[in-house]
Length: 206
Image (tube, rainbow, N blue to C red; front, side, top):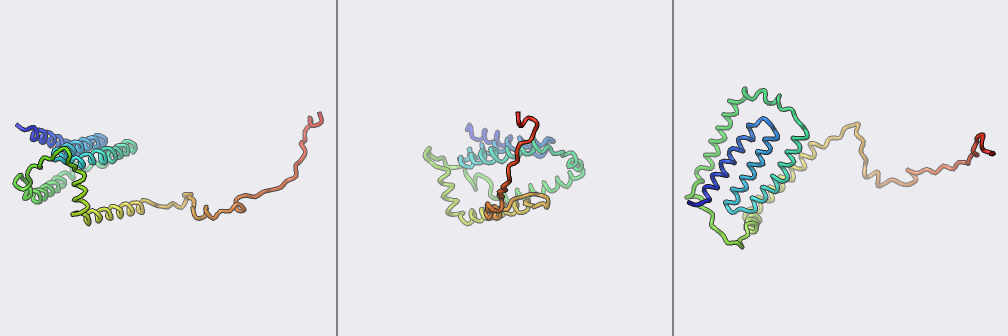
């Protein structure tokens, strides 16, 4: 019996359980940790498909940077989520209905193109095969316009987020770099000449 199916079902079970735990556990910190576990198991599935670059990127970028940042933000803010959970039972039927609709849509899209007859097992490659090189050659040739369009959309989203969060309050003090560059010594420094006065006191002559 091959070991790859056993590893696949093992990782798939952990991934599904961790994904369900992300949206069901009451503690936000535990939810973030379960999401980290889901990313790790997803990286294991990528390794089974011989997509080493995507697996390492998933671990380094999402687990090593994004999720650690989320975890620190959740721990430092200490937000009270009790008011948001008060209407959970009331909105549960609507949530289940929306989830079922999403599952049906995913099945309708994925099912016709799913299976070994459509996508067979990956072809085994030698030790000198570079997954990163193959991914880069496809990304910058076949999907070049899509890649550039995605980069432009992300840049626009970053600029929009900065503009939405950048608010100047009337009582805040800030410095104008243009005025700092035009500053002169005569405007900032004034020399005052004063006559020295003798020291007065009872013990001045002793």
